[in-house]
Image (cartoon, rainbow, N blue to C red; front, side):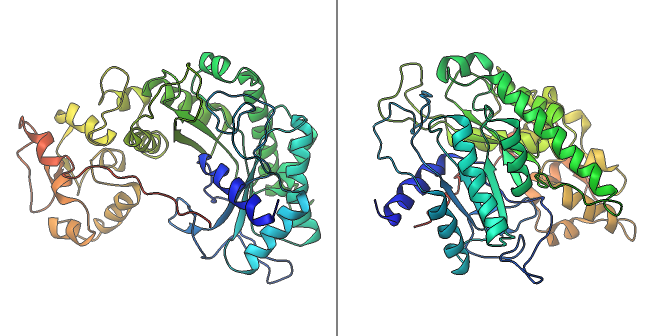
Length: 413
């Protein structure tokens, strides 16, 4: 099979993996030798939390797999075209794409072939050859295999910027039913080992002047959950998410809406969940990580264990807690301002800095291009005091006027 055909098959097969952001790693460039950088701009395929567009070659080593996970298009019994890169082919492809300014880094995953150790060894070889033989200093994200040996996972962390292990589904019972070859306890054990190594490397860097610090996944670890393949509601999804952050120090939990596949198992739903559900879960995830919301507070804005699909979870919470509003932008502490619909964390910090010098007025909010129709019913400024928080039609006043449309990632070819 020609290299281009392999790329078409294996780049398309990788699109189901959502955890491809490239942020949080150490800064490196090739001005003092080597090739590539973890900074800069290019043809963009992923967005970092700070807004930078990062281009990654997102591809599988192979889409062949000995596992038969019911929800996976590449499962052993799936009737799809199969392809496999050699290690050298993938190394040369990455370098060639970088030299053409197509990419800045590599996101590499794979189906399981022969055994977890055999597959993980090939993934590590790609990263090792790029780093050691070609001096590649760009971003590398490796999807790791929890059943692989600790020695291989340790070597993966020495070469990769970020590692990830997919937890796959929110609840253990669903994983046993839909992916019987996978073991949640093994996944969590591997996550725990990675957390320890990441923390050890961080501590060693604090004393690096005395001895060189070992390198291990400086951008941390992440995971992904498929949403809508089982009966888990949003409370179960977010409960698992909060546990993963607390127990394993994950940088991100990614959500991927289940997509129906050909010849699907009867255990799977016949239709995909609405894509807006995935979006609402991401919004709730940010409230958990950056806005000080608890799981119970987030879920208070929905019904029956599900988030409100019509409005974002912060607005849903505010409408259920109207007695907490309006909030005075010139006097309230940061924690209260973060609860105001329409105010993001960075905007709150800018407002806190600005109000040290003068009182904030509505026109100041307008200059920041904030959504005033959503914001002003909940906020007091120097020249504005709302009187609508007890209106029965408040939701209609502040809810979005247009439907939700999820952006689609551009294809590589």
